[in-house]
Length: 544
Image 1: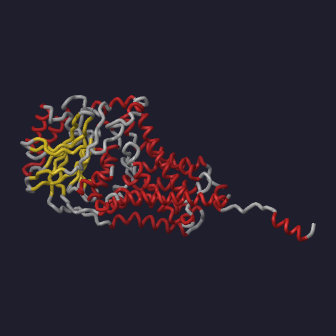
Image 2: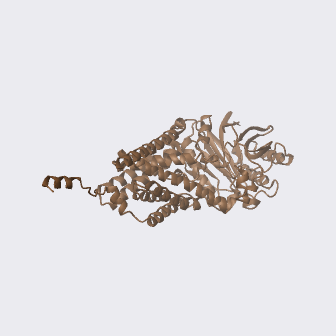
Image 3: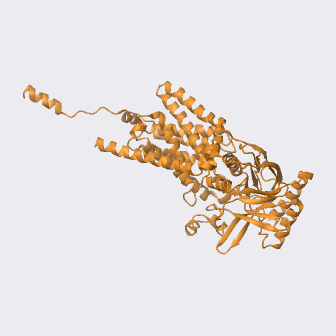
């Protein structure tokens, strides 16, 4: 063989390619069991950021723990599936304790099933983020990846707020931030912006941890500074609390029930009578100054007083004693179902305006696919008549003699407080204050009512309106337009709240922008994932 031939032979001999950095990282990746345990621990820690523990920064820490594990999976091969698995473990560890009240209310099987479904949504977010990271421009700019995580995560939060069966917004990361500076961002862009900002802070902290492990010392300092700056930004949001159109003197009555759980309404008119007694007490407390409005919770009248004479007599007794309108919750049975309503009852006139709940809770107020789910749980039989969704926006005009005008109020019924469009649409129709009327009697001594109060606080900031959450059993509270709790009750007690609520008419940026923030985040999340999928496909094609 000649030298020329030998040279050509050496040149054409295949050689083993040098491993890419991503492949090297894959080769020395952290064991899956370790990552899974760390992600699950992060989910448990995140729940500590919500009521009742309510240490808001722990929600950020727990989410950052998940982000660290997602970074460790890389972006090649089966990274998306690994990320989805880590997200699922985080979601199970978060939702099981977070919605433990569902076990108390409807039993273990529905509780676990709902937790697993919601964990699947977290898995979707984690897997989608892994695909988004495959975009070449994002892979080269790791400092932008926390932004991508925030957009994708919030986009999936919005998805699960609508699907399936009308959605389940409970556990949105924003609801942990009612008492943090980040919560004030609701004034600018509502709950979606608060979620995005919270995830952004968590992603930045995770980025800093990864850089520190890599001994790239410039990254951690910048990440911590950026995270602190985003967190502190809420302190500069100009949330206003002063009255713009006078004040409304409100007596809110928490009447209590005979016993927690399924026996709460076992004795006819007992709950109604409790609220009549509470009305007499708050009228006495108001003294000579009097009241402008009395508010009772959801289901405070356990019969429909429009057709029940005994119920009507009790309502008239309360209204006559107060001498002012009464806004209370009851149900109306019609052909084909029932409505969950908030009814305005005027002295000497009776019922005038009615608001019907627009978003009934699936599996609690109506049963989708009843024939299927009744085979899985006997608790389905507890919902004997499905609830029908209302169609009108909750903006109820209340005549106030002292102000010589109608004051428009926004009744929000129970779980509706978790949905972005309910309070926003009422404020657009002129609502000057918010009343969250709820019945928490079936949830026992769990954190359900305080989780709901955190949502009420964010809605107050978002709408720029004072709010009262009034429950049959607690926790009830008065909240100012900055989201601060001014007064609150205990759980399973008979108490009353007396508040001079500032009436506000100005429109916050969040209400003005409306669903545009949601739309922008949804489009952004879809675009990031789409670009990542295309980039990944091109990368595989080049390697082949």
